[in-house]
Image 1 (cartoon, rainbow, N blue to C red):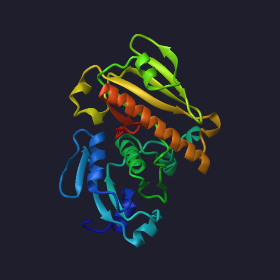
Image 2 (cartoon, rainbow, N blue to C red):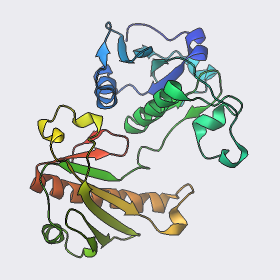
Image 3 (tube, rainbow, N blue to C red):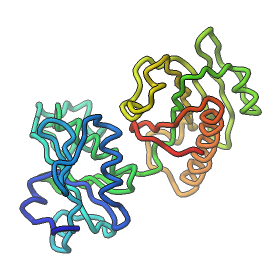
Length: 274
């Protein structure tokens, strides 16, 4: 890492906090997944969009880490440079629903700033990192396992009967000429596979020639029991979710193999399910 993060910059900018295992290449790969024209301006700075950049990673000194109350594992940081765009206060009925909005209750981020912060939070989730919000004591540490749903994108159409052959125990929910839905019971809740035409490919697929054709999407989604929705999960429930995540990856892998497709998570990042 070329230099240390200063206390001034730590106060002024939003920060992506990372552990020692993450490299600049890891961050670049995620940037290119979301921003098609992302590119390096110099050895430390990657441009995402007009006036939106990431710079680093920089070493996180102990004093600065204490100042921003960084998690103990955080050893490096990527600064997020973007214009400040604020809207009005958070409406009372929306308070407590989003950590980014709650951090700025009287001047909620909007526009490019909000889009960039949402991307930063997605990066933190994928890289098991955290997002520190400028000018606040708020550090968002998303659960890297909280979003386990996947979508397989491919140009090939998989019929419902072919999918049922791949998924023993699956039952049909609905079927039409160009779409179908299957459900598969799991240890907790059920997994639903929904097939249909996806006319707009995610940005991460822009380099795949077949994505410009008639694109099929196969969504593999977990429907947990109602008692597990909207609250923090306990240790046993997290174990069950991990088991379901493995099942979802297995299903997505089978579909990707048969359709010669690729899997993408809900944050728009590629996932290896081979």
